[in-house]
Length: 426
Image 1 (cartoon, rainbow, N blue to C red):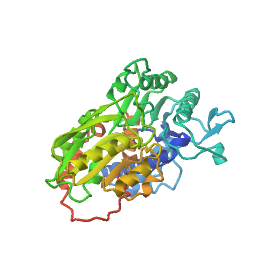
Image 2: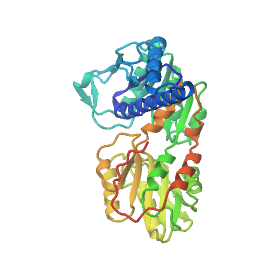
Image 3: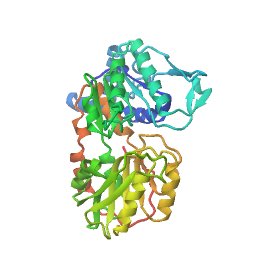
Image 4: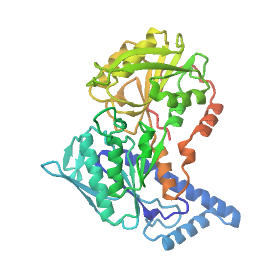
């Protein structure tokens, strides 16, 4: 954002995505301030001026070139843009939703946030009405908000949806729809230019659009940073296990980054059965390819629904002698009664910790001893900043370099068992 007009960046938070949007905005403001501070330091050194004088001059020029993008503060410090656009969402008695944008966004670069898996009460009509919405209700809210932004003259519309809706319906085995692709095409037809998402379930979805680009971010750095704070992950008795064949590439990345062996849980499924809760699953057989006896096992997956297949995999690993199991989940859905079933699994000693991101709003599970929340709002803030400036996202999409740097700087921690697990990783 160093060379872009901050007044051109506008963020609209749908009711389900407001919490995550506010966290990302906090990081955006920090990025904006840091970029200007670095620019001021460079200019002060180059032209032999005082830092305060450079700051005042930058603010003066910004007021002329980018009027109304900053709130006046006397010019001594860099004022921070507001970014967030006030929007009124109304839900009618029949369930219809209306979006009213409360100020001009004509010619702006608009980012629309939504968490389609938010199952907590969200605000409508300025907080006078609270409703728990289904994924389809959240999705319809995105549709009407994109339409409102287009009608209001937005220059470009980017959707920030960490959990891509209907991502598991990406291939047809019979007379069924390719709904993941269809949802994206609806976004595209409405006029969306980009989607920013997290660990999409299938890369095939990225190839199903004509014009719209999908930026698929990964939380691998944030997860490994959290792992590095746990006791013993750099020891020799550590193995990465892919929970199924579909997650091999993801876990191969972690095994390569951590320089640890890779094993695989091969699962045969009966797709005629659907899991309603964690007491049910569609797995007919599980086989372990690799050695886990007396080892700490790490498994990474993109999403956790009912938790049924994860718990079954943990049981197999324990039967094969795994000493301790740690899992990471990019999209912690915790559908149905997953939390209570995982509580029981934890009491039985099936696993040690589950690491999840804040991409999906959760309250109940964050209180659990076995759950570690990783904040990825800084990652999304960087992606938004770079897209706004038309800069490359390569270093965000491939984090191997910074992961290698992190691990090379990590010292072996002293053994400890009680840690502040609610991390705030940037």
